[in-house]
Picture 1 (cartoon, rainbow, N blue to C red):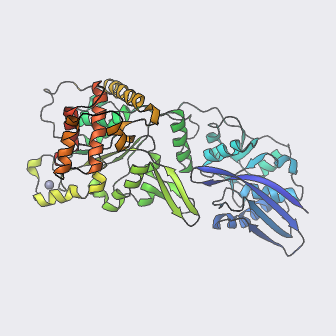
Picture 2 (cartoon, rainbow, N blue to C red; picture 1 turned 180 degrees about the horizontal axis):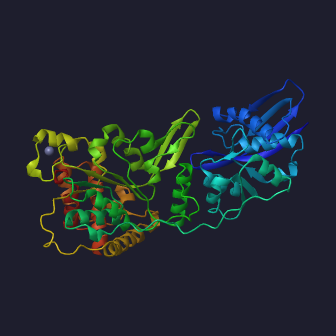
Picture 3 (tube, rainbow, N blue to C red; picture 1 turned 90 degrees about the horizontal axis):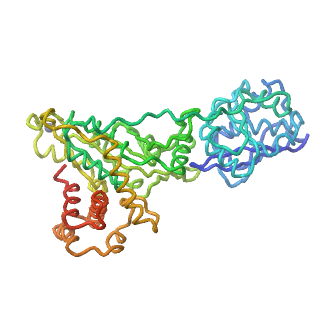
Length: 501
Ligand SMILES: [Zn+2]
């Protein structure tokens, strides 16, 4: 009996860390001892691994087994280490050679009969294995397709422990990933389908051009959801780095479509207003899963009937809106997930939600309270508010512009903003900090006067004034101007006026 080593990858947030597993089998009372910060699921793997080894036709050493997972300071969670633990133990009795395990990462949960079960987060685990210089990886067959996204490392898929043992003894071969197919996402529906609603369409264009958050208010049937779904089509495609980050988040959430290439479409995530905190922000048992805010990274988080969502959930959006990431604290430590998204809120003007305002049975107090459920601090971060009205004439409104036409203007405006702030690394006007907005280019006093007036009258907060100025910059970019002027600042203020919504 003796000592053997194998390797697996632990997951912490969206980061993988290669873990070395040492198995020492020797004299002493029979039993399995595990050291190196294992959580309950890793500790339970003792029983799973033992059953899987015996049911795969191998002998379980009837001695004292010590399993050490290192680095010892890193918390190990989940069931991904089963396969590596089993192979390390079997290598001590030379069922497999240590030489076959060197440079190989083994990952997967074992069923009692020796089958390999899938685990979440395969993509970040493979990236970590490649970064650590490991030469080959064995994964459960059912998640092999995710492996196609990581070039530069040999990946094999196995269905059971006996297959892996056969492969390590060079007695059989394992499956290799198929080349990834083109992502099957279809283009989002077209803006031309939305009739009328010029204000709201314009607000969408400004929001897309500057990266601003948006609130649409209107009675049911005016096309709030329709417009929000088309909004995502106005945004630029993700760059390779953003696309990879989004794919990693989806992989950790267990939502990466199998066998597809990296999608460069910005995501549209629309959680229902009755969703849970864990589903919205992230959480759940075991490894904290990314929530809707992270699955919307690089794209749009759309919340329909936002006032119904409740203040606690809505206010939880404030941190990701400000910081572009979420932190989920656990006893195992805090995990970070990226969460830089554009927020689109939709609301009915009142709880009775009639098709026409004249049919409303709510008192003015009830109406005010309803939209008041969207808290001040949250609304302060929403730069654009647009009112939508029932369409009164189908014929008179003429044809609406297509996504293609609007998107061309949006991309041109984004390019202008990107060029202006290139030295600082800001990509959209929404990302520019307040002081830089005012001081980097000398804006004349007349331009800023409407903002000063708003501040003096208490109609604007300092943050609100900065946000209006960001929108004014976006309006200037859309109009092809070098600087915003007083008129554009007033237009920006019109779109953030709470009374308009
Ligand atoms: Zn009403």
